Image 1 (cartoon, helix red, strand yellow):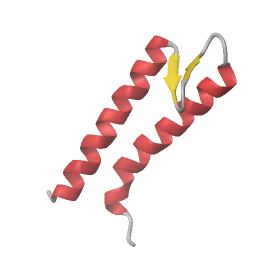
Image 2 (cartoon, one colour):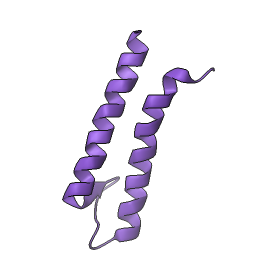
Image 3 (cartoon, rainbow, N blue to C red):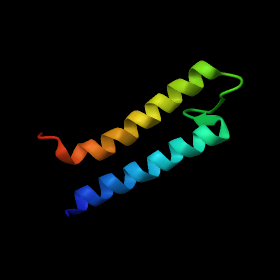
Image 4 (cartoon, rainbow, N blue to C red):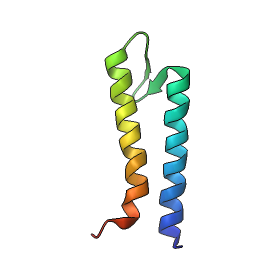
Length: 65
């Protein structure tokens, strides 16, 4: 495996763990903290963005640029 794969997958795993932690804790961070109970729309937007970023870390090594 190349170092590009290892870095990308490692970052993807860390971001996935962060998303899971945010789901459990009920708060997510973008520019500042968004609580699920107080700002559900911004919370789920943050979760969507972090999840998309984590997903691209797993798919990036297969992009043909």
